[in-house]
Amino acid sequence: MLNDIELQNFKNIAHNVRQSIIEMVYNAKSGHPGGSLSITDILTVLYFKEMNIASPDDENRDRLVLSKGHCSTALYAILAEKGFIPKEDLKTFRKIDSYLQGHPDMNKIPGVDMTTGSLGQGLSVSNGMAIAGKLDKKDYRVYCILGDGEIEEGQIWESAMTSAHYKLDNLCVIVDNNNLQIDGKIEEVMNSIPIDKKFESFGFNTIVINGHDYNQILDAFEIAKQTKGKPTAIIAKTIKGKGISYMENKVEWHGKAPNDDEYKLAIQDLMNI
Amino acid sequence: MDINNKKATRQSYGEALVELGKINENIVVLDADLAEATKTKLFKEEFPDRFFDMGIAEQDMISTSAGLATCGKIPFATSFAVFATGRAYDQIRNNICYPNLNVKICGTHAGITVGEDGATHQMLEDINIMRGLPNMIVMSPSDDIQTKWAVKEASKIKGPVYIRVARLATPIIYDEKTEFEVGKAVMFGEGKDATIFATGTMVAEALKAKEELEKENIFVRVVDFHTIKPIDKEIIIKCAKETKKLISIEEHNIIGGLGTAISEVLVENYPKNLVRMGMKDCFGKSGNAIKLLEYFKLTSKDIIKIVSQFSD
Ligand SMILES: Cc1ncc(C[n+]2csc(CCOP(=O)(O)OP(=O)(O)O)c2C)c(N)n1
Ligand SMILES: [Mg+2]
Image (tube, helix red, strand yellow):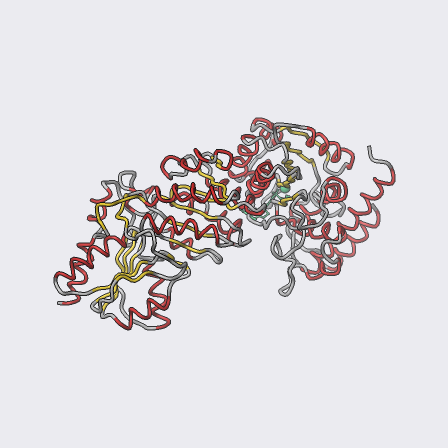
């Protein structure tokens, strides 16, 4: 259990990240707020408690692959909170002279462990990192964040087989189960549910949690670390657009920027949490 | 060249991996359930801990290689050319070429000399799609010696490399001491009647044609393009200036392969006609490999016919 101070600390960081997400998307007039807001709490726990990152280029650091790369705003915002990139640079997101590309670019952005954007590939990449860790007898861990729409890609299940086949217990998958993709509800577009049963049958230890509850997130990571001989998949039930009243559970806020009024409303919403 | 001393370049690839594995412990090899045919089995037997069978999952194989490369490994991802490049194109593009990761991809069983398996297995577009990717170097060695050099050389290059090799045993052209350089083609002879630009299995055919033509007092030169990207511009321009006719030959579609790469150089530097021999924008078919080369007009005899037409 987190004590009150830790809990408040997480809330503060997540608040800042959400605010950065809104500002980035507003400034860029494009980007993906919905899925960025749904992974904010998970990223907060990862970067401010769970992951060991002495520096972004330390060979022994824990790694994170944001396989759902369209949610780059969440990643950049948390990297800025960490101090790996200057906070003021977030304003340049998606602009022609900026290094903050629309989707994460490992060669341009400190702290980005893998270039992503084409969905369905990040778990394979994470497996490669985890296999390399085992070969080199290093004890870093690899975290991979997938979307619940993304897992409709066939390659996800090729790679899920690989994670279990090579017993990658240094790997932890997090599925952002926000129930929405671009064309609508997951169940209506292409049903990937039940997600936990699928990963379980592929040989994963699976844990279903509320992806906005810091204690549950932390406990799940703890169980993942203690699980030996198989990878763990955390199915995080989340709310797309979490924290911004008019964005929550709304499919249209997958990849859209707020206008001036909507921006003001969003900032107000964040004050009220 | 002793035309009876033959080896398939896929065999050379497997042997080269073993040699490389001995001197560099960061070399890892991945295959997709074809280790016997691609000859990565040789590496697997020697270094079981550094060999990963990914099952029949080429996309996963390519992206996993990218992950391994981010951690300092030098993966050689291997399958038949058709699956290694075509099935996993987006993975090669977005996970390897764009981030410029140190992954080597080897496509064995390229071209129609796959033989009996037929069109679904005969890759004729891999040079085209690999050549079109920024950061990718494309190698298409012609014999045992060159393939072993290419594999070793690829491991020294920091970045993506595609190596194209063949199933069919073809003559060993070079001796062990021959030195090659990435991006520098090898010229045989200085004949001025025609230049035959060739790559892969077609180099031996071109050399056979050269010998035969000399008996009729027609003097051609043969240029072996072991590297297709970057293409050796100087030698193309030099041959265009010095020889009457130009021919290219490849076990690949005439669209997008060696012939196209040469055309691009000619158009921008020294406009001149080029006869492109290769697969004429069609798929292959089943049959004995040698018979298929005859059927699709990709033998020394066909080269001779084209060259003779010029001199008429
Ligand atoms: C291979 C590929 N196909 C399509 C897209 C376009 N695309 C971007 S986001 C998205 C929907 C993703 O849904 P989900 O994984 O549920 O993400 P989230 O809800 O967390 O935003 C699609 C189809 C893509 N980036 N990559
Ligand atoms: Mg979703």
